[in-house]
Image (cartoon, rainbow, N blue to C red):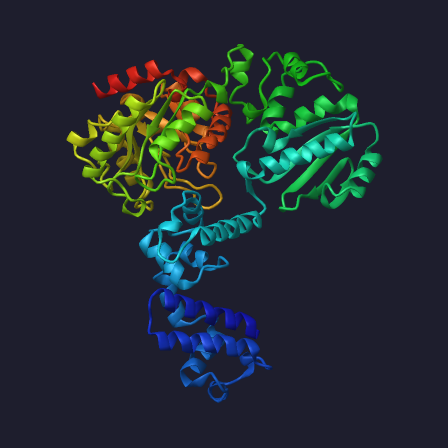
Amino acid sequence: MENKPIARRLRLLSQLMELHEVNPFKIKSVANASFKVDKLPFAVAGKTLAELEKVEGIGKSMASKIHELVETGTMTDLEDLLAATPEGVVDIMGIKGIGPKKVAIIWKDLGIENTGELYYACNENRLIEAKGFGLKTQEEIRKAIEFKMASNGKFLYAQITKEANDLLNKIETVFVDALVEFAGEYRRLCEIISKLVIVLGSRDQQMAFDSFTKSNILQNISLNKNHITGELANGLLVDIVCVEKRYFYKELFMQTGNEEHTTAVLGRTKDEFDQPTSEELIYKKAGLEFIKPELREGDTFIAKAESNNLPQLISYKDLKGTLHNHSTWSDGVNTIEEMALYCRDTLKLEYLGMCDHSKSAFYAKGLSIERVLQQQEEIDHLNKKLSGFKIFKGIESDILNDGSLDYPDEILKKFDFIVASVHSNLKMDEEKATTRIIKAVENPYTTILGHPTGRLLLSRKGYPIDYKKIIDACAANNVVIEINANPLRLDLDWRWHQYALEKGVWLSVNPDAHRIEGFLDMRFGVLVARKGGLSKDKCLNALSLPAIMQVFEKKRG
């Protein structure tokens, strides 16, 4: 074993000791040994215990630990501390710029146990509330996590929209007369992108390759048959498929849908067609209504397309209001009035649903009963002040371990609507997690089930649930399911939208905004809602103000 890996293990031991507040003198001893081992001019692996004890700066106690590490590959002290530390917290310690003291605050004070939760907290502006943190530190941590996420070769859709559109614009500038369009995961509006695919219809493939080579559009360019591959500065892989113009639309079709979808469509065509003049023609020859790119996952919508019964997909302009938002009353950045004015004057919406955290969310300044009443007084005042706009009194009520909500009924009935969400004890098995959520759904005051699995894309899988049982319970209890529009969540997963809609369950595109910029996430929520086949007539916040008031009043009644 080389010295550097040994030094790294010793450094990790010292960090864990500091995290768990072990004797400072012992921490310093291990940290010094780590530094010493890293700088030694010889390999410690070849030394006996007696020889290690004689090395200046190591000493008898540390020599024993190093010898154990060399012989076994680990240390008892290290294993004991690792066992006492969540795996995600150990990962956090590897993020540049976060020392053990800050990790301790993140873990023990804020209740954050992995990088995904930490990234989400940065986006919610929650770190600046903690001791020893500021806006600059929070931003540095957020950037470090984004860099780490990118190094895995996968990106959130929202992370790459600007770079993707910039790239397409550059290609269109270089190839003025060419046909150019996104394909693959990005065109299908997938929530996670591993490769950006673009189809380029031009006259000369070699000329295209030469043009890319001479430009700075892509890095690390290579040519493989008719594929020009490279990557963007952020590490995103790019595959540009070059074909003659006459084959453009067939290639675009082939490169857009997943394999199961393209096979299903082509299997229905009787005539060969090498040079279709549009994608619409391909579907027409297959006896199908044109299927939009976002729906081209498998054969889910084939039968609907055959009967000319595809959904009229929701669009951003269909949204009339925004529900599930947080203000300075809990962990938000803006006041209720600032959020309301932005929604009314900038977004041209009709209503705002406030859903600050409930009393169990102590880490997010959750509202005590007294503060709930105070907030509702402020909302009453603002509703008198703001013309042509309505602020609804809501709450994001924590679903407790037993499935109950964390306010008594006499307080729950004071809200216009309630979003019930799980925020704690995410490690239940599927049966317990499902039972817990179903009980919350059966609460007569629950209006919306918030982010049903608690997932954080690329970082936290989310707690296991029986989707069908929970959706069936929502159908039975007239509970709406949230599509949390935060790009890290996009939860309910689009793969379950059709099942919910078929059961008669409505969905709601909620931004979970913690600042006014967060409202813009509704665009990503709409994209994933389209991917799931949602139409505006089944979306709660596509209702007009009078219509949604009736829905809330009926639920409360």
